[in-house]
Image (cartoon, rainbow, N blue to C red):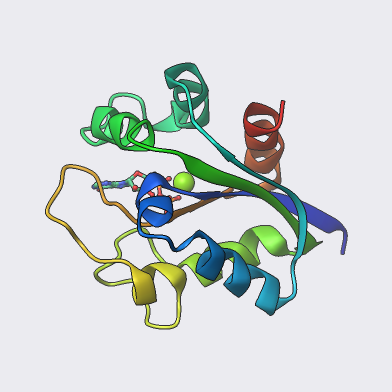
Length: 138
Ligand code: IDP
Ligand code: MG
């Protein structure tokens, strides 16, 4: 089993709610290694690349606007199967039904908006991780 890297973003809702540290602590407590970390402002160009798979979906434009609404915390974490492991830790996309014990399940809720504000992003494959790390840590 080879060591993987994944891109984690604390989205603007997580930063605005002062949850960045609590979220990063959960990932570190599980045992993954923090490789890179920064607080940054996304640009529309970065988000168009990052969320290319979602172009044309009804939540796409609200998603881009949400991700531009404030700073994000971008991190690279490393470890065996970290891509799958972080997504399990994050929980499912919809925070209302995300399992208790997960980041989204414990810290997130539905705010009745056009896009789900669900605190975190995590890469979904080795290919996505490589592509996303290049966007956020160019
Ligand atoms: P993921 O973040 O769990 O991988 P994706 O399907 O990649 O979920 O969607 C990217 C982001 O777009 C989600 O994290 C969420 O913020 C938002 N999103 C996805 N699907 C919906 C939806 O059906 N309604 C509202 N927002 C959505
Ligand atoms: Mg995704």
